Image (cartoon, rainbow over all chains, first blue to last red; front, side, top):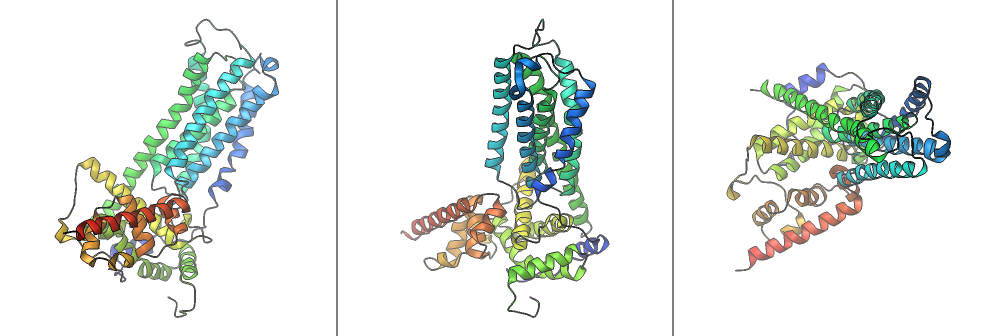
Length: 231
Length: 188
């Protein structure tokens, strides 16, 4: 049972046809450093395009830039876990990852409550509706750019558990996008922040696992095609 | 492995992986020769079905090839390959569950999977093999990886995506459960 098995000819052929030298990937934490480039660019673009929020003085440094930094760091942490999850034998473990996801959601709610406490923000007629679609679009757009960068990093690892890696990556980039958008959105009402900002960051959280599942499915089909050649 | 039997097997495997990453076809063939047997035995222990284990073995090495750039030369090559085999097994379980297919063999058809040497001291190999099948997959994996395949607890943790301490605990509990099952079986 433990003896060597003959190398199947179809596997041998596949390896021979695609045997270009590869460079070992850097560690997940080092690869996540690319987000250090993305974050300042995203912040600069948002500040250049949108007006600075009118309640910045009420919020102070802690509840404006502090919130941005906290969400960027937490989001980058989740992305690092996602990149680890995509590499065999580098996963932090499902429990630790689920705990990190729960901590990220808690942080998002906590910061929303604290910011609301620091500033009443700009009053809007109906916080559940007003400004909502604009915030959804803006956070979604910011998140999409981060997600594109992270998706390339994850797919370079050829992940086996792509859906779970995608869930972590989507949650991380969603949180980072929410952090950057905090510089722009002047509404601090919890109904607005939790519903619209939460929905925007969650849409990436749940779209990534779906694309990850699709990736896994495609990969399995490819394996099946190789196996079929044996018959 | 290399003619030089004094070389540390872990270092030799790491060197083979590094050569394979560099595009050396012979290195892949030797890596397959070194690891296909133990990985197949591991997959047989998990699936308890030789045909399925053979399919998963091929799939494992297919993924080894596709993901070869993710191997870090400073880490255990064996744990990296077993981690891929573990993931391939989980993926196949998930897809079988989705399809509603369940391939379990009758107890008397079980393949000749290796069993922990400690357990063999208090029961026949056949009884241990059957008892192993009654353990949950999580516990069975921990026992097989450490007590049969000889991976360190750190490597077991790497393969299963858990901490070294959790791997130690899981393996210890699994051996305890295995003893209990064998004791029950021995009681007339």
